[in-house]
Image (cartoon, rainbow, N blue to C red; front, side, top):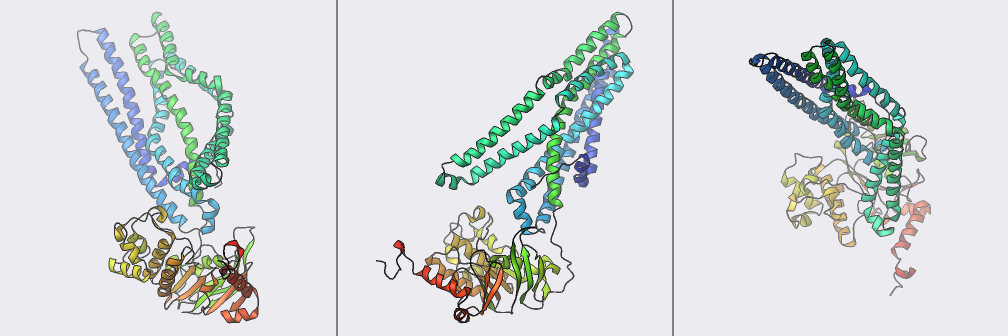
Length: 590
């Protein structure tokens, strides 16, 4: 996914739903810092009174120290409580908004962005923003407020010591600015190198079966190693360029140099009777607070830079173009499907996948889409549910343009069984209920029986409550396919789109799948994408595609007699059926 920078305004913009709660948490953090400084001042006053009159215990100031310390502690805890509540609420709102947006974008956007990149946005980037809001916003307020309040207190106590402490910090920041003069470019290179390492790790792990089969990890691990080498080079360059200046700046901004200046200058002023000892003591207790706030401020700066990248990616997904629908069109009047002069290409500037495609499917009829690989058959099937929108022309379902139909209405009229069916890591029953969560168990079992799936489900360790595993990993391809068919049977929608529904069937299971499909197709309008031509001989009409164009249409016998593309495909199909090991026809093989 392309990345853009998000400024400070972007950070506050994306936090708008919880901005009030975050500001409240930051205000509590500032109040905590002020009570802490007040406690230090009262401690200095207590010590001064004890030295002036050792026999009299200064109860008022001592109790004030305890009260200020307790208040500072409680306010800090409350600030972090509020920021964490805000972070959890923001995380929920953002993930919900991202899921809703991705449900309304085209499948083309998802494919262009990449499922891995989108998953990273929904999980990692939102999590990074959660961490920033929960843990850093109170620290952020404290880091900026504490030096200002401390400087004001030092000015009130003694302007000379205040300027001395400030001079140390100004010098430290001047050195740090020299060390960070190329920070923007190095930050960009560092983040890019870190993401390359993450991508290489994910690729290496996900491709492990292929890696072990073909290259023993040499090629793929080489990419990971190159990403690591690049990361090391970037970090080493940054360290060399920042080097001494950065380390020296860190040493100067440490509280110890400020304390040394206050000790030396205060001792000289006290020795020459130009500073009261009690004020000097108060300055020593308060003065290091200004320096102590600088280190968190610098660490927060790095965290903010990382969060800006996450915010930019989140905002990019939230701004992704959705597929418009007026929602004002009427309901489909029947179960017909019509393509009117449809053109389609995958992405701007991409090759034309469909050109001038037009056909009608009458209610209750079975139409098969055939053609060589890449002819556009599956594209036609996926345009009906608006996985993409057509480039030109229109698609009508029940007489209504699918672009003018609410997605819920379209999905209530069309069911799909694709070549690769996704199962969630839930029970088998829950996967069958997908789309019809209100269905009772009797309806689920009836759908499974109609899909020829009940017997193997009943034999599972927990029956219908057996987990299917991630992506249905605990089931075979044929079993996953029959669960998908049971799902479509349970939905009972008037239009059915099948995309090579028997692709994963072995000879033993193919008969069961064909029986299940026959039950599913009964009384419905069916659009069947097929590579096995023997499954479409009895279709009411066969549409033949080649290079994105509809080149032939008719019944099986008519198309064979025409001796065109379909006849050529049929002859290739017959030759494939008679193939055997050794290249001899099966009838001759021994």
